[in-house]
Length: 396
Image (cartoon, rainbow, N blue to C red; front, side, top):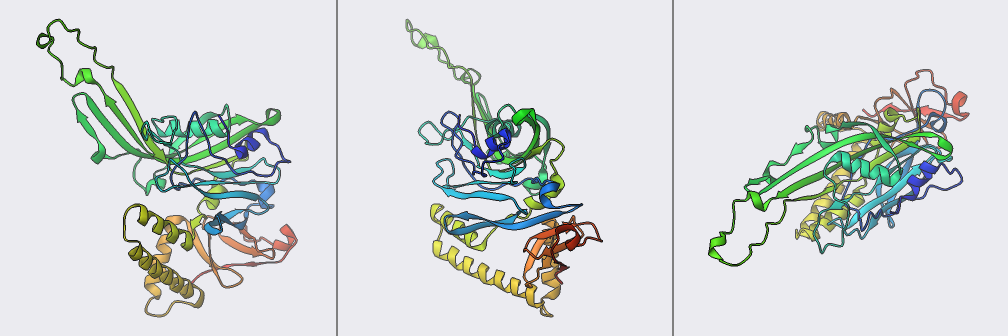
């Protein structure tokens, strides 16, 4: 079994290695699939800065020459990878392959590609069947940190839009003599302990979500029996044994790691929430899916043009101020979306809107372009970082 190089760097603690991106995982003839789920990320105080706060710099995840996702990573970290194409397990053909690490390699985060299983005998997609979210997260952990053991697990209904998980998909259920099928959605995160180089205790967390299905076929319970008297003298074949079939697919998982005692999920959540698709990537994927789904690509493109124009107008309103007629409506919508994502919109030093985590009451932009979030009302950028900075104001 091949392992993700970035995960191996985390487990082996090799500071001299640059942060390689995760390669395609193969388990037997495994494969990778699907699209995005995100967990809390990890940041280390020695990397972020001094005192209570979070220092971050913008990062762009690329697909070829197209900016696909924008977000923040701890200042001074290096990242590698992006979105890739040609995945046999994803019906839309794309996946992710990205990591970011601290300079010493002790701290890191990344997007683990989605997986798919149970797609049929003749499918090029091969992956060990997984029957639950716990199995999925454990499987990913072993691929990233061989020998890791799960020490905690909790479900994350917020990843599923606030719905209780696991969420049974009643419309896909079947119950009849000899056959049953159950399908459900699930989302959650697990904490793992593993040993790094030299016996150093490490901790890692994985947030994942996915769709799971379990089918049971039992001919003996179907009630369909052959009457031997109808075929005198012929031996009757034995009924095949009951069979359980597992199928499903996972979204991208978000993975973080650190030495034991330094896994900061609060600061990490701020990083996790910062990643959003760009308008260009959203339009590209929407058009691509429209072709696959047999939809009218021209109509999708027209709607994409309308959306781009609307986004530009909203951006202009944030920068230049809302006009009297739209002010209340737009502000209410923006503040509602901020509450959902847990962010606050500020205007940076160039007057552009930037959304930063609202768990920190003060936001600063430093002279090198990075941002520092803190709850320390007396923060002085010159004293802490030996550079100038400006405290940002929330957008009106």
